Image (cartoon, rainbow, N blue to C red):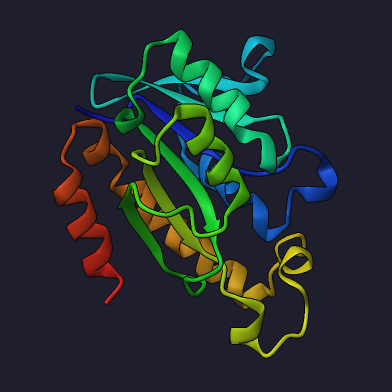
Length: 194
């Protein structure tokens, strides 16, 4: 089993482009590949691109629903291409991880992330891969902002630089995930984090 679909979570629209909640979109924007050609696909409510990584065809997706309805897009594509949940990697912002850290995880709780909740509901399981990009929590930065405001704001410059570094390290392990080398990918990504 290997990754066949990489979903970057975010909200569509220019007003959200630079907000923390769009970390999944940032990841896909940084996944440099000469094959990448984004197309709007109405039946999936998403922008999609098909690329090759290590001789594997891999779909990329940016749902064009808002975050809380991401399951519509992911579920539709998974059913259409008969993808198992274990073949899906969802890249998303993670409040409980500091900026600059990226962690791979398979299944488990959605941690209150509404995009993940909707995807789990659409797939009928939480048994899919996640790439969690740390954005930090407002409390960890002594901010009084409610979480909903925090995720819809731009990160501070130093936090953005850390997030960008984590994205670069995470992109480096994508070929391993596409080859089905999940343990090796996790070890490589998480060892760098120490």
